[in-house]
Length: 64
View (cartoon, rainbow, N blue to C red):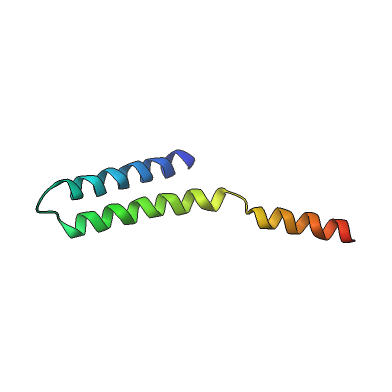
């Protein structure tokens, strides 16, 4: 699954750059590239643990 997320990011970035390269750019291709890029970034960010969650958990254990 991690490999798929990186593929989505690379694929979305390539599509967005391709749409931006031409003088007569296609807005729909650019938007779809950005959407694919953002889906990949979102999926990766879900796997990163929150720093605030670990600080809150440690803080409550010290007070108990």
